[in-house]
Amino acid sequence: MSEQQKTVALEAELDALRREVQRLRARNAELEADRGLPGRLVDALPSLVYVLDLEERRYVYWNRELAELAGAGIGAAAGPLRGDGLSSMFHPDDIGRIEGYRARVAASESGEQATVEYRARGRDGGFRWFLERGVALGRDPEGSGRRMLGSAHDITAHKHTEQMLERSESLLHAFLEYTPSMMVAVDVEGRLLLVNREIESYYGMSREELLGKVVYDLLPPAASASIRKANDEIAAAGQPGASEHVLVYPDGPRNYLSTKFPIRDAEGKLYAVGTVSVDISRTKQAEAERAEMQRRLIEMQQATIQELITPLLPLARGVVAMPIVGTVDPARAEQILTTLLEGIAARKARIAILDITGVKGVDAHVAQSLVGAARAAGLLGTRVVLTGIKPQIAQTLTMTGADLSGIVTKGTLESGIAYALRARRRS
Image (cartoon, rainbow, N blue to C red; front, top):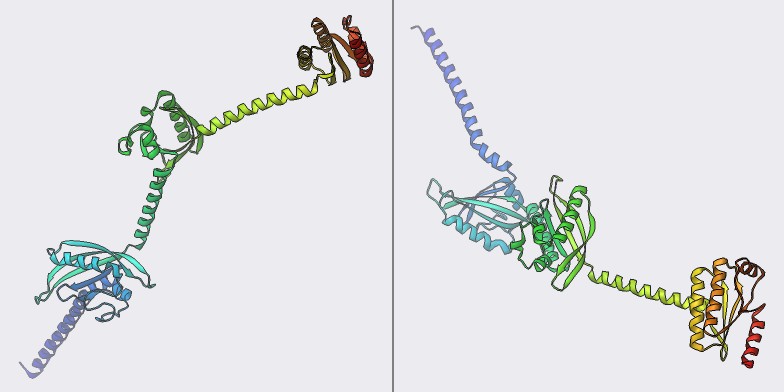
């Protein structure tokens, strides 16, 4: 082989070596990129991730999220992430809980998981809740201390929701236990979903015994039909409403005013009817008593008014007068007759004056009633003097053929009184 041919062969071999070097460099770069991928992925996680040497109690690794939260720079091994494995960012009251959790991990088999909840300072300086899961990793390849992998994520929002739910449950429990009203919820079939202490007391059963039972089977037929009808109406209308029901107790029936309302699930579908029932028995009784008192008061007022509009006035011994004013209808004519006869009997009157000066007018029926009153008084031995007869009243009496025989008529009350006093002296 000539020198020229040797040179060409060497150059070709050199080019092949260069290409192989480039290929190996590219592959090495790929391997370097692949080796850094897990770290980049962990740094991209929103969770806090770390590796802790359990024997030396020092952090071997922490991701970007934990470093930023703790205030340490990337790759820094000092700062808030202390050598004892307890960061100053943890809430002091939770240190013992964290120590116990790490002790459980240290005592567990590799791959066995443990959990803990604790508070740590957030970026705003306030404490936030975290849920951490940890597993034991065993020893590193060189045989140094046993390690654990911890991963924690922020559960502050969940904790807040949980606390709100606990508070709501506490409030509901307080209302159920201490309200004097009956509180109950039934599904569309009438099965009891919720009861309070008042319901337990009424049925004489515990909450555990009541829940799931059909309420309509526990009630007397009348109350069962009434409550079922009201619940069905609320379920059909999908709107709250009120109704009254009667429940029977050993000491007698009680009236309840029930406010009923539909209860829907998260999708808006009605699945239950809630009821709050207030005992209104005392109110109903008070209303009845008030109505009775009002009735009696009205009767007393009417009696007083009747006495005022049909007074019987004693003028002298044995002489009474009844001035009649206003309109005389049949009811009042009856009252006049009653008052006149009772007064005559009570006062043993021998002469009674009926003065109709103030009467606006009488019809045929009333005219006959007045004449009848006079004649009735005559049956008791009392002479009746009718005074104040106006022309139109006289015409009415004449047209109706009223028999005034035995009745003394005078034009004015004054002349009637004078006549009565003279007659009294002569008798």
